[in-house]
Amino acid sequence: MNASNTHAVTQSGAPVRTLELSGAGLLACLVGAALPPIDLFVVNVALPNVQAGLAASPAELQWVVAAYGIGFALLLVVGGRLGDTFGRRRLFVLGLAGFTATSLICGLAPTAVVLVLARAAQGASAAMLAPQVLSVIQATTTGDRRARALGYYGATGGISMVVGQIAGGLLVAADIAGTGWRPVFLVNVPIGVVAIVLALRFLPETKAAHPLGVDAVGTCLLGVSLLALLVPLMQGTTVGWPLWCWVLLVLAPVLFAAFVAVEARAERRGRVPLLPPSVMTLSSMRLGLLIAAPFFLAFGGFLFVYTLVLQDDLRLGPMSAGLALTPLGLAMLVLALAASRLVGRLGNRVVTIGGLFLLFGPLVLVAVAVPAWPHVTLAGLLPGTALFGVGIGLVSPTLFRVILSRVPTQTAGVGSGALATTQQLSTALGVATLGSLFTVLRPVDPEIALVVVLVTIAGIAAAIAILSRGLPDPRE
Image (cartoon, rainbow, N blue to C red; front, side):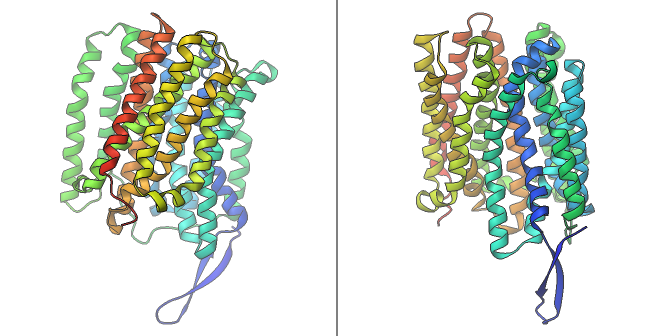
């Protein structure tokens, strides 16, 4: 391992040697941070080709996206705690190796079922990888170096989304050696191998002084309750809504109630569970989660449905579909970089303004698509997509900061974990709910199906704009 050494001074005046993150180590971290969001966007662009290449059903196509989100969400907090306990570098390398291996399996998948299972494992690997990045930066940098590293880290998400959209379109359109959609996964393999080598060579090992334990029972219960909800939602239409679908839907809230009870009992016994109920006693967290859940649900559903419409119904190629989504990613990137200044000037109103953009974006898309259907041009779609992207860019990077501004320092990590888990679960739920709504209506009329989904998203955005007025002002 090659890492620079710096010296801190204790209160007694004795020097203490600490490890400092080198440029190559930071590069490894940023690659690890970029791969999970890139994978989300390249997969969305590739969905129609996946469906054609594997003869996947609409439900299986939803699972290709949702399985990744479920695996990511359920193990995200677990991954962070394992890194604190066993070493962040170790978990980073293991997660990156798992992500690389599962990307290879995804790229070689012979059936849709194999692809879905590999995607779930890929999401679980991402959950081991992603939490280590910020922890390593926080533990191995100080002062201006930390500020720069965090700036690069913050920009990585937006850049990844733009790169994912364009790269996904290019790779699918190129149809390299007749491989179709498969390179969108296979491209991760050489990138992952290089990042692993960099991490092993340059990334310092750090651990938490007092790591929290893993809540295995709570994690399993949350996973089972989520599957009880998502399986019937995504499979019901395909299999004709048999009795077992309704039984699972009834069991889902019962299982979730059991999860809440287990979490409360664990907290009473002095442990820190996956999602501590005490965090919900804070009004800012309650309202924040009430806003975050539908926000990420709308975002996940929009990406899934819009990509299918662009290629299957409007007959745009994968490259054009990627370009159609580029304004969304660019807006997110630009606004992520400006988020701190905007919050400093406008406070919680940034979320309200973002909600209004989220409202008008889908309505502009409806206004453009309905008169021209099915001959909607790429140029006609760009304004509505850009407006929606501005809304995402305003809300996404600022919502966590606004919500956590009233969370006590000692529980900030737990609150952040609850929000991150909500983000991933809600994105998967958006694919399940809005994707299923679209799938049911599409055989009747694809235009009506799209309009219903977009109007639903606009309604969610209106609720977000209204609810956001009750958020705390982080400037106070």
